[in-house]
Length: 528
Image (cartoon, rainbow, N blue to C red; front, side):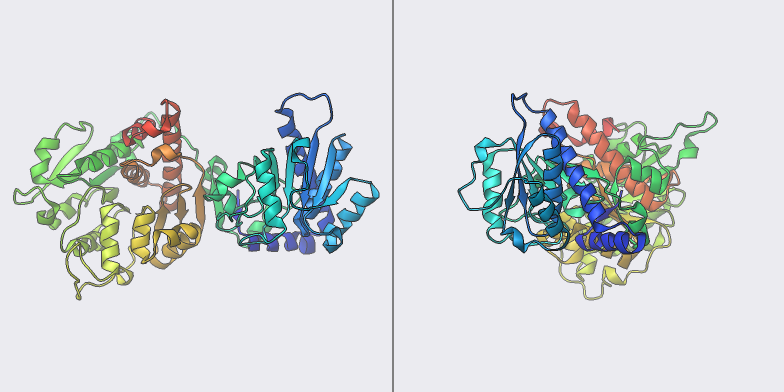
């Protein structure tokens, strides 16, 4: 399923009208009918009444308003009582919206022009929001703002046409005056702002309804952002959301060997979660590398994994670990994951660069390793003083083998020299740009995790829940992606499937508990 910006949708509309030849009035008719049908479904779930439903249709002056007028006509045909509320005098409507206004007038559909404080909201059973479409951004002006606020205050269920008025279709940002919809009917294709937060909350339950625009129009115009769901996994990657059935004549070597360079004295649990998740995600073997002084205390903690102690002079610290010894452990592995729970030390960016340039197998870079990259990008090393001789990450050579970076918003902010707020404002654009510039797969974690490929495609995940906002879940994800890489999967496919599987496991784990708030990272591993 494609995920589009307002500009992409505008071009798709024009392509459909001009090149395919479907008239705009036909598209508007289909859109209005789809909105009405969702309102019918919503009304069926409400209490029985001894009278026809009464609904308010809030109409703006653009094509979104025209969709609302078609909806009002279909409701009237069903026997519903409707009242069209024009935000502005109806003579201001132009083009197809004006055509629908004239049809509504000839049919005698009741209508008024909005005056603040004059509507008797309590007489009605529901609202259709057809005020502002995808082409608007920023704070709604008057009288739209007052109409939106009154609609929200009414407490009535609201069906939004294409996008809630006051919601930015591209970023998901919500204005002060923004419709809080019960259901949003996305017309033809899902708009980015409906999937991204906080827009997803304002949209309520979102349904995508076809209106005659062919999916091929998005492909023809080069749209390359997708909703990450089971359909996308199947159509884009030929993957199932569940692990494939294994052939009977296979063995542990068939499914790859992961090296997890993870954990330290203070954060050994991060390495444990990462290694265990890799095993749960289907790889045949895991070697867990730790400073040698930690190897004996951790032996048997995860009996299914092999412990590899890295010579450290007895300190138990990665700062003293022999990087050559550690790199030798990666020589025969099908994937390496590095970063969870490593800690930081002076010179660590140079240490990571050795891994970056030496490891020939696919590499997953997570947690503290990402902060080492960020420090290299800033021209500093570890938490110590500036290191003028250090080459910034942007100048590091591209790796020939697949590379997956898995930052959360704070880590992404450090990698890019931005604030977290700036990262969150354009998660899709920022992830895509970073992946393209550095030739990596970028997994920007958080609500609606974004997976960006080095070829420019972006996938926005639909699984997961707030209960997963707990320490260690990122370590689990890193292990899952490494396991899929070790099994021979393409890096973008491994990241996409890994993110989706991780979210599904989190959803299963949350459903098994009294409250999602009690979820811990180990629960996610157990439900993989």
